[in-house]
Structure formats: C-alpha cells, structure tokens
Length: 190
Image (tube, rainbow, N blue to C red):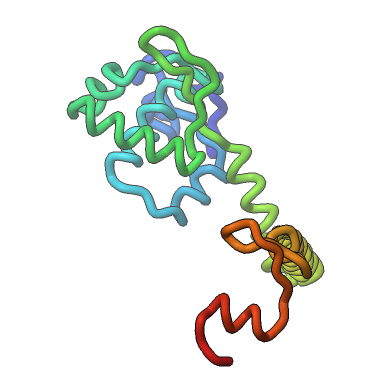
C-alpha cells in the first residue's frame, strides 16, 4: 500500500496496523498553502492559530467553520488577548478571511486564493516577464504625474484668483503690480 487512499484508512488503528500510513486521522491541506506559508514570516502564535483553523476546517473536509476566540484560546491553551492579536495579524496579512459573523463566532477560512495569486505574480517575475513590471511602473508614473499636474493646476488657479493684475489691498483700495506698489506693500527696496 504505497499510496493509501482515505477509504483504505477508515476504521481504527488496529485494523490498519499493516498499512504504511499508521495514522487513521489526518488533515488534507493544499500544498500551495504549505509551501507559501513556509516562506512567510509568522509569529509562533500565528502558526498555532493556523493549525487550529486548519484542524477544524480542512480536518473535517470543510472550507470554513464558525470558530470563537474562546474556542481557539482553549484549543491553544493560551489567553484570549493573545488569540485576538494573532487573528488580527493573520487577517491583516490576508492569510485568514472572515466569511461571516455571528454573535460570538467568526466564520474563518484559510485564504488559499491569496497564495495562488501571489504565486502567479511571482512566477511572472521569475520567468523574466519584464513587460508586466515595466507596464506597472509606467502606469504608476502616469498616475503620479497626473495627480501632481492636477494639484499644480489647482494651485495656479487659486493663485490667479487671489492675485489678479488689478487687485485690492487689505483696505479695499485698488492697486497694481507696479514696482512702487510692491515696494510700498513690502516696505523695502527691491
């Protein structure tokens, strides 16, 4: 039995004593998730939370499940605040997603799509597909230039509104941009 199937492993341990896989219960986790998580930098509590989420989702052939913070804390034998912080970080990193909320539970799921999309982006970069990278840089430059131009044009409009060729001073008297008026305004020589 080189590659035992799940059907072959059903039953108790004694019935499967001669199989190569001595463990009856196991959790099917997508390989891409394991490979990408091996590369990521997570704290020990984040890994432990992931193990519990995997156990109660993939371990029962589910993609998501309602898990309360107190349930996870009890499974990890740690305090509630540590679990809250760990889940918050995993949600911020988009490794876990919340698919629904109930009164005291969250429907948590492992975000496998994040890893699939990240892998596709990395594969494009590794293959040497510079077109995507150059296009992205050009688009970013265009967006930045457009925003800067918009701000500069707005500033010009604001300046032109306040400084017309013929304007008024603080007292409401008309004045122009002659050297004399500028000297008087600043009360100094140019």
